[in-house]
Image (tube, rainbow, N blue to C red; front, top):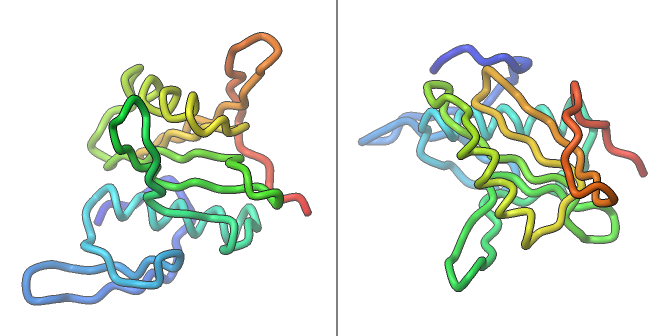
Length: 148
């Protein structure tokens, strides 16, 4: 898999009969290793190790409904009150991040109402904070670490 613009982590990878699998610390199971999953697992470890978010506050592929359509967030981080705080949309490194990607995560946030939105392909990372007063997003260099 491609080297990402994230710290390197000792990820558990194994070979099955048909493909490689990577262990997801959140779901506690092996998942088919795709380029997008490679990015997701690195970003999960980044949130856990670098930003110190508790594993108990992170959900992967959390399902929700928008206009009678079932959607899933790649990574959803809750605050200590149990409400969504951060939505992370992961793309494969080969996928260019475009306005469509931001539109997708913004639609998700109409339902989830998180404070921060992150879009990453593992090489580029975009971090936004919701400015509800001015109904806009402020781009940040990075997201804050976990605060108790």
